Image 1 (cartoon, one colour):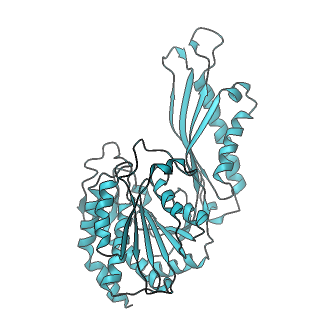
Image 2: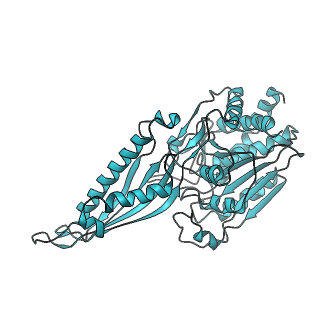
Length: 410
């Protein structure tokens, strides 16, 4: 393939990319509301793909051991999409995954579902996370048509629901089974290739006390007990982070690649009353030297075995979002081949680790498909009222993936 022809073809589709992504942003596809955007994307992918299939997510998904934080809505009208560009035969299969759900608007976010285009940048909810990634996949398929490129292997894309709350859409796709030689999970990485991704557990912890008047004796503050548990979790986090050092150099470059975050704390009914109950919610990252099951068990144990007799009997914890970490080595052929394609488009081809979690582990760990995370846009503006993506970055990402697919799907 002539590099000049690739660049010319991609750049000529800039207006089509802008239109498609603007349309996608216009759908308020928060979790539970993805049906209409899936219908729209079915039509758009049908323009460029050989097979486009709705994959229903049923109520049975709620019984899956990897089902995460539940949406209080029924399934049935919010399918995933499975899209295929057929090869001529005999080549390697390349699989993509990304999502069409978005997080709710940020506080003060003006017109989050109305795309705004300024100076070659598209603003709006989902611009980079991850509707810009969906648009990149569409453009990849389109470029193969425009340039008349016939790959030997198939390209498959899973466009899923409910990624933002733990990956339930991908759980449904993985349970169907899929065979591929490599997988690229598309998230905004600024063109950095991420072959190692941390996991995470989200939790809701409850401490119970003995309520009473502020002037009475014999009370036990559930709030103060919650603060004790937070300190125990902090000490646990520090210990397992220290134990991981030296095992995974890509993670070692970060001061805290697996943070503990306490995002919510609620307690008490009255300022002058000792709280009977306190509830706090948060997330703890985990690295590949521990499974999510180990971390959940150890978090419970660090409280119940702390020596605090009250907490041993008056503490409960529930886990919702539960992801393992996933790892392939930086010199894996998938990584090096993608790195070459990135550099061919003039990008540095940096390789690093992802200090957030995503759906990559399900393909890498459960389907045994070597998986990396990669895409245009920046995570630094995702989930914010500044969410945006540079249109040229989508064009460049599609050029990279076209180059990579030509070399890989042979």
